Length: 302
Image (cartoon, rainbow, N blue to C red):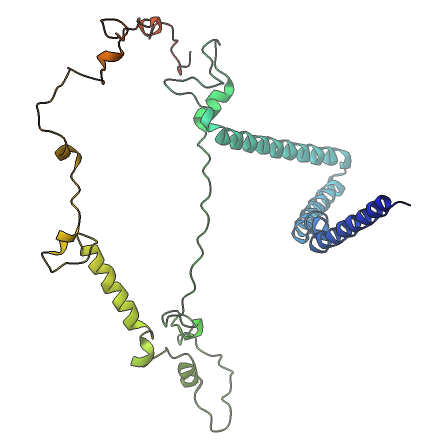
């Protein structure tokens, strides 16, 4: 066996080992996901058993009535017809919901006053029924992502057990047959008031430890908003003498009257081939003369 064959076998073995390792990782993460979600779903089975129990109760009641009247076949036919009507009604509602969702999803295809939609062609005698469906439907809006609240460590966000709502109300009286415990024990209401009393922080704990730093940043931010210029204040009047003066565009040119409508581009008579300058004369466009005559009335339902 040649060296190239040995390399190929080793490479194939290495790739298979990598493939098996990645497959094991994927199976470890998704093992049983489809079975748990679609085959043995707890909530789906619970709903299914509830419907089955209700159906069994209805059948039992129907059979009792049938046994009393002696018309079992007719009652079963009525029950079958009732179930069929319910299924047809459910199917119609499901199809109506699908059409409504599809119309909301394709609401951008609705005709406008200027441009007709694909379901309202001006070459048709009547518009498509989907055009009326799009007019009735509302555009589909995307749900905004929920903004997660930032975790706060201030004293205002204290434990729920210390809030006034968590404290048990004193209006609810204890049961009559409840006996008081023997011994030197305190009253229950007094103990609960001590347990659920609100937080009373000291002056040192009430304010954050970096209050001075936050106040300085706030003051610096307010001063920056009031500044007209971002440059710092320069108290010396001779500071600008070290800077080089940069003239503006309208001051660098020579003062003269504006030559309006006299010269629109640079001219160099030395490069002219003939005595006359090049004239930019173009023929008129025929398309502009036919504007508004070759277009149909779009966006109107005939």
